[in-house]
Length: 105
Image: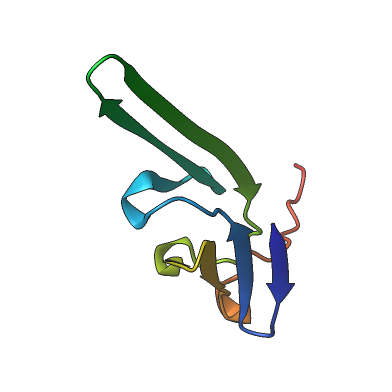
């Protein structure tokens, strides 16, 4: 997983060859980006006196804690050529949480 930071966004790249777009499930829950994928395939060949069957199964899961500066509602994902890419837009400075001093009484 590669993460690049720009002034206005983070870019995340995740190599995931041999998958298709429909194989991915991506969610954000409590500030955590969850990525999972699974696929399976089977191939059968029947001849007069034998049968050959092959099965394949692949899966993975990744989780990434998002910084408070990410706008969760603007997260975009794109899959092409075996690479899953995310664009994580940052909040402007006024939207970010700032430290707050609490007076004790």
